[in-house]
Image (cartoon, each protein chain N blue to C red):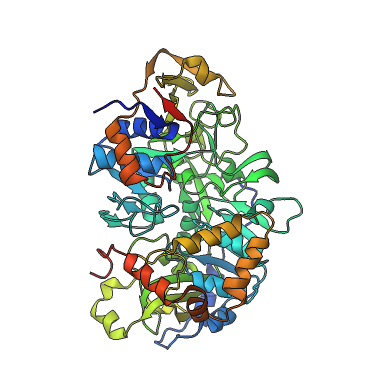
Length: 270
Length: 327
């Protein structure tokens, strides 16, 4: 494993997430983008039989990479070598039963309690600044997987005190039992939030977002400067490992050779 | 049952007995030949004001040729179940076909960015992808609602038609979604006989729920096969004939999308479609609609005059993955 020195922010985030994926756990992964790429990288390098299923109900595929843009699920290549081709209601029922340990999601905006917005930015519901696709499949993933893992960019406009619209639930108002009172499965909810520069968790007592680790090329205050609220900070903030050359090769040559996802963000030179 | 909170979104009230009465009256139980052209099928079975659902989208095994025919015929005031879609809702909104959208994921496009404006006459109700397919499941079970463990707590719930109630059995909170029985369901399949016994190979979104819950069902199919093949291998039947009202033979019917095991998606054509949909002024989309929909009379003409044999053959060759489909 050779430590890499030149990579994009998105590559750094994807590699951190891929390294944390677990062979004995199951994942429900949203459509495309960084969550999907991270699970493909983990599968290619570390966990060939990764139990990562898709929104549309393909169970644990071993996709024929590279996937074409926009065709990261329901396509023949994306669904290749799954153990079952089910459908949206079937995979949803498996989540409802508690079969999925982790949900892997991206978001436009997140608040301190891990509530996420993928519906619109700016304005109000009837006069949105910019309308996006909607809750999509993220709502059921964030509601019913045991733990939700979120990927986004470290930007002030993304880490906000209050999201413009809760498309998918985090800890809601953060009060004890808020998810259960809303009818969501007990003991589920946000778990980790990854950006290229940091990894957050949530305080067990207060369910408030907590900074747990940062990338090598930033300090804590750099991360805080890119947030609209101040998170809790772990007593000892760990350092995240940068990508390895092997990981970058797999990403760039096999998984995303067109750079559709991994080329996003600034370049980091260590 | 105690209702704790209710979404404020508009939705079509479930009517299981009304649906049963429709089925009793209108769905033939005998094997009758239902093959017709896409013009006949859309003009006969899609009415202005209908609630429309489709399986998949214009990139993956969606009923692209039927969607184009709906636009060609200029249907009006459709309600659309916009789940798991990329540009179909945008196309239908841009062409003035739509008066209501139920949002799972309604996709992207310049026309959609304006639908929530006060001036817009289009109503929008929020759900999620699985909320929409679960509503179809309830509709396909003939029941008025279905309890689920998601959607609540969110603003999507507030702008939906769902309810949070105390479960009368356990006294715990649970979400109820109203059943959805669309007027018209469109499904593109790999194979189908003349009666409507249809086969889908490969992954899908909710083809069975869409076909079962809808009052009227149009199947477009890559090929029409003899019923003898259906009877020799009934395990392969995805949709039995009496759910189906029309069978349209439409090779490459999902173009520009792919049909798994048969042909790849047409990357250039998809890019052209997306660019047309995203272009803010709408002139790009007008040109697209004229070129690919209004200036051709049929799907056959679309294939022959706008796409061409060489390109279609190349898409077939590019579909390298055969496992699980025809092998």
